[in-house]
Length: 195
Image 1 (cartoon, rainbow, N blue to C red):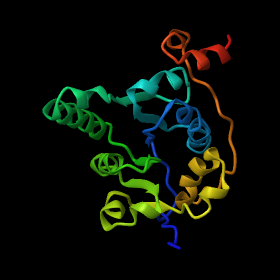
Image 2 (image 1 turned 120 degrees about the vertical axis):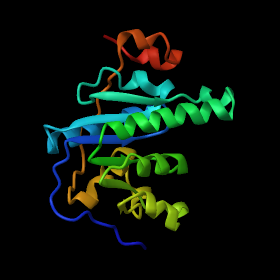
Image 3 (image 1 turned 90 degrees about the horizontal axis):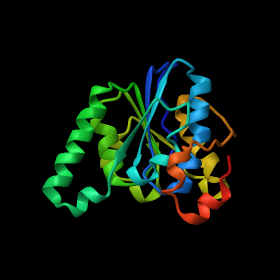
Image 4 (image 1 turned 120 degrees about the horizontal axis):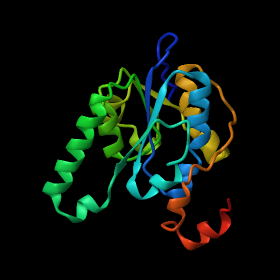
């Protein structure tokens, strides 16, 4: 059992970046976290970094100021192109001067991006498979994952706020899909969305 690392003192971030590099459904499940951030820090701008193909899931979410995407097709265009595009993205993120980055992902690239943003507060999860000094180096605080197998994914995502002293058990999930994005979504998902 690794103790949760806490940030020191009360924070009032003006710019927050949430990183989640997963699939379409996972994007919907981070909306309660985004909503909770806006409730706790109403004046803060909340941005999201995700895989480009999942952008439409959050595109109309009014709690999000800007969405940045990693296009997995970059890799198919060669290592040089991928590195150039990723470096461009990192420079763009650094220019935003984030006060806080919440890294919900368990991938090394997300940890490296988290570190390279230059944010003063960089919170990730203390994943057992990532108990390595380099993972800790990329984050200023780690939230415990000890109870994650007993929690719904929404509650797991919300638990990243624990190092901030915030204990939010639940918040509403909201679909932020623009109508234009419906045509690009898998047919099964489009059939369940009305409006």
